[in-house]
Each structure stands twice: as structure tokens, then as C-alpha cells.
Amino acid sequence: MRSLIHSLLVTVLMVWSTLAELRYVATLEQDGEVVDASHIEFVPIPPLSHGKHAGYSPSSRRDSNAKNDISYSDNWCGVAHRSTSSDPVTNIFGYFTVPDLTLRPGIPAPQFAAAWIGVDGAKCNWTMLQAGVTTVVNSNGGQSASAWWEWYPEVSYAIKGLTVRPGDWMAVNITIQDERTSRVVVTNAQRGYAITLALTDGPKLCRLDAEWILEDFYEKNEQVAFAKFSDVWFQDVAATTAGGKTINAEGAAMVHLRNRTGTVLCRAEKWDNSNFVVFSTG
Ligand SMILES: *[C@@H]1O[C@H](CO)[C@@H](O)[C@H](O)[C@H]1NC(C)=O
Ligand SMILES: *[C@@H]1O[C@H](CO)[C@@H](O)[C@H](O)[C@H]1NC(C)=O
Ligand SMILES: *[C@@H]1O[C@H](CO)[C@@H](O)[C@H](O)[C@H]1NC(C)=O
Image 1 (cartoon, rainbow, N blue to C red):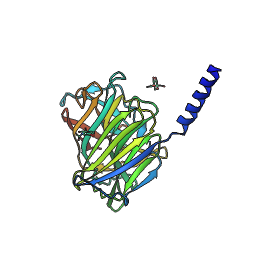
Image 2 (image 1 turned 90 degrees about the vertical axis):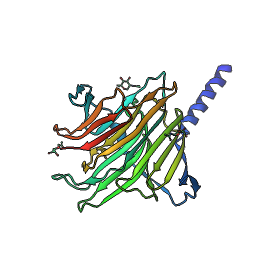
Image 3 (image 1 turned 45 degrees about the vertical axis):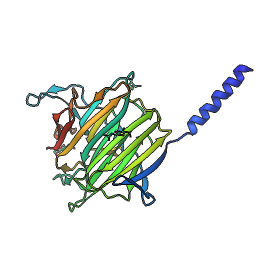
Image 4 (image 1 turned 90 degrees about the horizontal axis):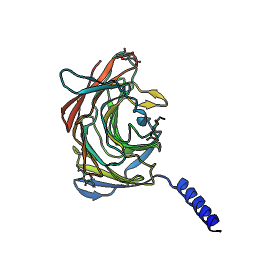
């Protein structure tokens, strides 16, 4: 009897846990004051496979000038750095500019680049949590940018109703309360607003690594056309672990984006452990 009750209980709990799904509550602040957020829309967009960026080449080499380890990825440039499961990541922060694009000659428009900050993009096989901005440049050179957040493999949400322009300074601050509960703050430092998303019942995080990335992402299993861009600085980058350790660019490889036919299209260069730049090449 006891074991039947036990197994019923387990069944009920499992059903409950499969029913639980990601929920979010948004709060908007303007210049530090909470303001009405009812004009903001969160438009679900299919996950942009931002999550599939883990495959950077393990064969890193030393850059003789910069004395940084370099590795290559075919879809992103920037920094990813890890902690250990015994000392999980609890916060990740950084400033970056919204990519300011120009058309890359010889490939079709529209062209894109996404800048974002996140956790669990490298070692965790089933999830990652991230927020950032995507800029698109059209055939006439006109650009539009939009902020988004995503707890992969749930859908991404484009944040509509807040102005974001190429070159704006943004900040992302992700605080992980527990494996399924996080707080994501996306700030546009230029325009004085900050949107806070209180997220619950998300896919279980590993909390193993932190990343600061510029990406040529995938859409419907195809990599989007990658634009040229003005230098994108990532500043004051830092992740904190439960044990109080700081993770940043110290000891991390600078990951360059090299396309499938071997052309490097983005390089990452460290200024110091908290600041680095990614720049367009190729
Ligand atoms: C992720 O998958 C790889 C390959 O299947 C496996 O070796 C690794 O242990 C997995 N990582 C985690 C955190 O489960
Ligand atoms: C990020 O958010 C956490 C939690 O609210 C806060 O303690 C921390 O100071 C923030 N980090 C920065 C750099 O603003
Ligand atoms: C890689 O980039 C170069 C230079 O833009 C381009 O000629 C080539 O077609 C690209 N390869 C792929 C697979 O996109």
C-alpha cells in the first residue's frame, strides 16, 4: 500500500512537471522608475538556433601578437568560459553595442548579426538562456534592430515597443536563482530603459558556462547571410559563481568566426580580462 501511494505520488509529480512550462513576468523601468509596460509586446519567434553554437574547434593556437589562445567557430566570435558543476554560474553580466551593419558584398541581402550574452551555450546539451539584439540590413542599406530573449529550446521572444538602434549601448544581466528560475534584465543604457523578465519553470539549466557572443545564427537550419559590422565592444564582462569566483575573459580563448570555406569573418581581441572587441574581417 505504502509503495502504491508512493508510486501514485511520483506519477502525479511527473505529470505536474511535464505540465509546468516557462512563464515570464515583465517589468519596465524608465530612468529608474517603474512605468507602464502594457505597450510592450513579446512576439514569439522560432528559436533561432542561437543554441547551436557549441562546436568551436578545440585546436586552439596562440596568437603571437596578442598572446591569447584563439579558436574558431563557424557561427560565432567572442568569448565562452566555463565553471564546474560543483561551482555553478549564478550571474552573468556585460555591456555591448547593438551591431551597426553594412552590406557584405557578393552575398544576398538581407544580412544579419546578433550580439548576446548567455549561460549554458557550450557544455549543456539541452538548454541555454540568453538575451541580446539582432540587427538586419536590407538591400538598400537600411537597418533595423530588435532585442530578444530566449530560454532554449523554448521559443525566442522579440521585444517590441522599445526603441533599439544600431550603436546603442545595451546591458544584459542574468541572475540564476535556481536551475529553473532566473531574472533577465535587458537595459538600453542610451535610452534609459530597462526591462526585467522574471522567468519561472524554465528548462533545467546546467549553469556550467557563460558567453559573450556575436553570432551568424541559423534560421530554419540555414545560416543567415552575415553582414559586415562596426567594431562591437563587450565591456565589464563578468560572470559570478555560487562560490564567489569571477569568470571573464581571463584565460579564455578568443573565438574567431571562420566560415565553412575557411574565410575568417570576425575576430575577437582582448583589451583586458573584462573588455574585448569583435571586429569584421573578410
Ligand atoms: C552532452 O553530450 C555529449 C555527447 O553526447 C556527452 O559526452 C556529454 O557528457 C553531455 N553533457 C552533459 C552535460 O550531459
Ligand atoms: C545584476 O543583477 C543582480 C541582481 O539584481 C544585481 O545584484 C547586480 O548588481 C546586477 N549587476 C550589475 C553589474 O548591475
Ligand atoms: C566564406 O566567405 C567568403 C568571403 O566572404 C566567401 O567568398 C565564401 O563564399 C564564404 N563561404 C561560405 C561557405 O559561405
